[in-house]
Length: 365
Image (cartoon, rainbow, N blue to C red; front, side, top):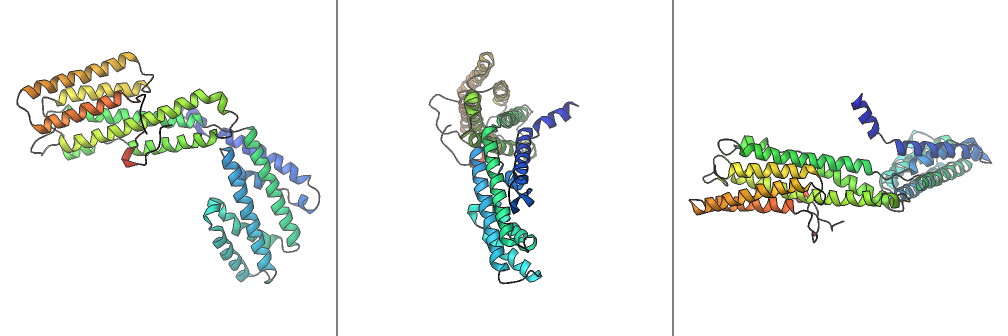
């Protein structure tokens, strides 16, 4: 039952109810519309459905694109129907011309309405094509306007999906750090196979978080609910930016350890004297990441991470006094620097949040 309830909570109830309300209102308006248009009331809810979006600006854009596509398709059908009678060849010609016309990049995914509308007009509106086009285009326009109004009155602000995406990224980062720590706790350096098993699904999780963040940013524009959720929205955006930076640093750390601390290398990056302390520091960092955002973590957890990092630094100093290789000192120093940067994220003067896998970098939010 708990799983079913969790899945039910993830369903888009808000958009579904808003779209249903817009469609019902549009159908009522179409049914009472005077003239021949009243014979086709179902085109009004069609316009409402194609106009609905999770964002106000998206709803306006979809409405404009859909109406232009429908009118363009209607014009194609009227022009071809005025010259040719309906036949398989005429239908094929209308579809071909409509598909080409609808391929305009400006129409986006609404371009498919061009050949669809052309077919409607050519086949259904044979008896009185002008009246049919007036009803079809007019009612879809009215329905689209109702859809936009409903979006403005009941806007969506998808904060919950963003929080879930942030939670998923945090879980994967913690899992990745624990995998690295476990790999370093063995008797010797991990093999290629062992390192290949130490890869969490960071990039897909980050991509989903980035998409959720962009969606909530778009939805917040011209959204009357933004003022009531400003603090929560800003916290989410800051937390997502922080996790992106930590993700990038953990990816760097993973690549470094895979290359330098690997069985078969002439000189391993850490060696038996530094691997245990590095593993402890990585586990402490995983606990820190799991505890929350960089500005709101438990001070005790952060202190434990700093203590583990200090112990690693002390051990590096001890190894430096004895016999050591440049590889060991370079790798260990890089590990310390990366962990310290994770602990200090976000910094008050932090610049653009880094992203995983060399993705584009954008200004801090």
